[in-house]
Every structure is written in structure tokens, then in C-alpha cells.
Length: 319
Image (cartoon, rainbow, N blue to C red; front, side):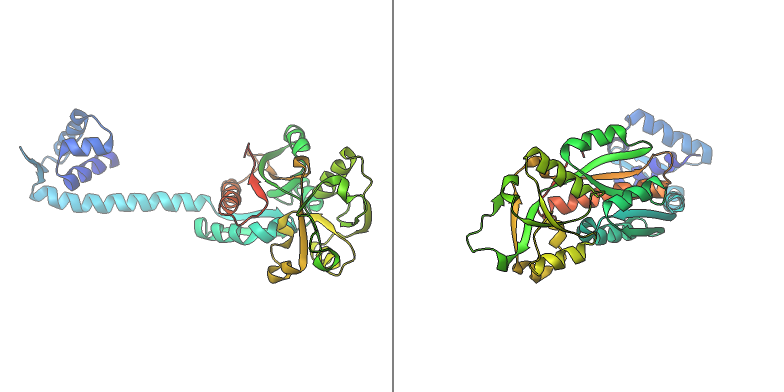
């Protein structure tokens, strides 16, 4: 006796017709009839009473139907238990502060809902540090950054990494509103930034590399007056009027009503976009739990963009 025979029998009893059950099960009617007949032969008893109107279970069929339902439920529970048993352990995920501000909590909630037995180890750090941690096998997964041009090269050169473009973020000039006139433009080009006093992260980090390349293409020498490798400290400096910064919208996502005191102008250059790359160890190095987490992370990012909760972001065409 096989589980599929039990499923077939239960379906026939539920719908009261072998022909309808065959349609629901995507089987040929004659094949389903043969399986029911074989089941009755193994049990040496008739389970179904066949009539022109359909089929009804015999007394033995009613008793067998109840036990078959219970057996199928137990089998499904056993499958779920086996699947959950595979998805245990710890998965380490690295997010930059801007990414963590938007993606961190939705990811943790989704993992708690889908895989409650998987323990997440969340690391928030600048992208240069996350890259080093991934190379050192201290992280399973990380969202790193690159420019649109270099992202395609990154896919080819990231040794022993799995790399997948996730989303693309527009970059904004962000300044204290008190330093701008009411008629300040809502969009700028790279040439407009030549005289701005910039507050940026240091060179090893993905955003700075993207901006350096954009300034070079525009033949502009940036006036970097402060380098700050802390998002909170950097934004404090901007709010106090010490200078301006270039960041995606995610940099201000946690600020709530404080955003009203900031001026933001979109940079109109598609090559200045920040590409978010979902990076990880190679598939053969990742545990089943880590592979599942990678899927959940990508799902969360797409849902946030599609739901309008990640402003200035678009799903990568190859994500």
C-alpha cells in the first residue's frame, strides 16, 4: 500500500466521483480506477459502492477513509518536521547602515515567520568592512554596493562568491534645509556639485567608489571637507550645517519628522546609482538555512521596493 493510493481514495470519497477525482488529481480515469481496485484487492474488501450517480463509501470504506485522512495528515507533518529540521543553525547576514535601516527589520520578521528555528546573526557595518568579513568567511551573506558599470564586472571577478544584483538606488544631495533657499532645485547634475563642501565615507566603501568614478567622468574635483565612517555621525554633521552629503534615500529613512529639516535633490545621472549586490559564499559552502535566508532577503527587498517603502529604489533588471 502506498501513500498515493490513500490520497487517491480520500479524494474519490471527498468528491463522490472517480471521474471528478481523476480531473482534480490530473490522472487518467482508468488509471485511478485501477489504483482503487488494487487498494481494495490488498485489503480484501470493497471500499466503494459504484452507482450511476457516482460512488459512495461502504461501511468498511467509511472506516478506512477516516484512518486514511489521519495517516495523510501524519505524513504531511513528518515532511514539515523533516524540512524544518534541515533549516536550523545560525546564518550571519551583513548589511550596511543605510540598507539595515530599510531592510533589517523586515528581514528579521520574515525569517521569524518562515524559519523560526534559524538563528540570524545580523551585522551592521560599512560595506568595505562587510566585504572583508565575507572574504574572511565571517559572514554567510552580505548586501554590498557597486556602480552600474562595475556591477557587471563584479559578477565576473568575485571569486568564490555568489553575486546577484538586487536593487538600484538613486543618489541624493542631502543638506540642512536652513542652508538652502526655498527655490533650490529638486534635481542636480554632477557638475552642480563642484563647489559643495562634501561629507562622505572613506575610500574603501562602495558608495565612495561609485561617487569617485562619477566625479571623474564629469571632470569635477570634489571638495571633500569631512570623511566620516559612521552614518549617524555623518548625518549629524549634515544636519548641523557642516556640509552636504551624497546618499540614497535609505540614509534618512530612520529620521522620521527630522527629514523635514533636510533638503534633498536627486542626482540626475543613471551611472551614479548605487547597485545593491546580494553577495554570499558559494552555493556549495552555504548551509540549507543560509540558502533559504538568501531567498527570503531577496523577497523582502523586492517587496519593499514594489510596495513603495524603499523610495528612490528600483528592482535590478537582472535580479
